[in-house]
Length: 570
Image (cartoon, rainbow, N blue to C red):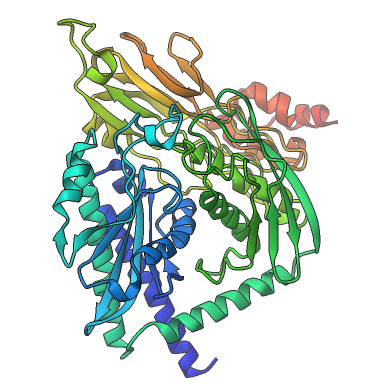
């Protein structure tokens, strides 16, 4: 490697550090708990053609990879030569942004010595944009909230007051929404400031030479990894609970010498509710599902994703046209990586995980007059509130390691601390603990789900706009591993609730969520008995499950009864 190449590699790493600081600025300044606590965001830098050079490590694949497409839409409306220093552009258009109205995408030009040198973009999930609120109930996108086209929210450093008047009037949480928009713009400004410092330090007039180096090396490295794979076409399917009826996703994945092509033919049709997925979001998680198996160590950018191609039939739930409802597109979209890995398992079984809980369990909670109305008279009611809390079940088992418990995959968002939610809304989490016996048994077991018990303060009524999945379709194991436990949505009294849609938890009741566990990998009887005993001692696997699922007998001292286990295992 030449000195020039070493210098460019150092600059590439520095560029990744720049966008990571961009993302951390958003986290430190955001108003929404979804951003500052869960990290439901993305941040990246783009060249003047709208091609992503680098992304922040913090952020979700759905945001990052669909945001990668969105910058091109911004440039079509506002060409680079028309942009000025201090301009900020914004949209939440699901088909031009990242898939639903709750995601705001902001694009900002970066200037050095009066010359535009790049573009910064970010996306964040905000709590409220009006309409029906975050949930699957809408019949069209127009019911789901404010629809913001690509517009200029700051003009040469001055806020567009008409835009902000409209935004404030259209949200239940105007202060939080306005604050988040300022945070998104500040985040890009910090990225631009750090970029200029970097260019000054390395005496660069622009990013073009570095961009060529990044793209050339990323593409070459990705093609080299594809070349190692066996050729052929591999098919798979996965099922979702859907809304009114089950949904089936199908894919055929073809490995070529210089590309991987995925065709989603056979996937279920569009839904009349907000679980539909815009095509950009499907491509985002489809690319991620391939990349984590085929080329996980290559930085994510425009060129490293270029060899991944998708055919998404019109009329299927993974290619929702405007104005279909798409508010909770993640419920279906988060299953796409598991679908892709089901195909790749047939080609490279030692590099693929079992199915996990996949879809986030992020209950939108609401209380106050919007739930109780005036029917209660002078009875006490909770103050008006709107909040979302992010939580996850277990991930699928890995070929050589157990799955991760209560961990979001594929989104990667963090589980929100209960204290953060209780601090901003009148709700109480009476329980939040790992769910015993929820992990699918296997040589390596799945990750455990969670148990959550939520109430309004004083046990007063509140509402949940359910957005849950993997209840009728548990995460599947691979290679003779057992399925993970299916999820459950209940009231504490035992009444079963619908997995999707607006429902009121009445006075004196609590919402009880049993989150799914990840599937296992490999036959359970091949698991090391000492690991089974460890899980029993930790209270995660019952003595009965150890015996019935793993054929391991645990004595009263919590240790393996070797003689009884040998008999049981034959």
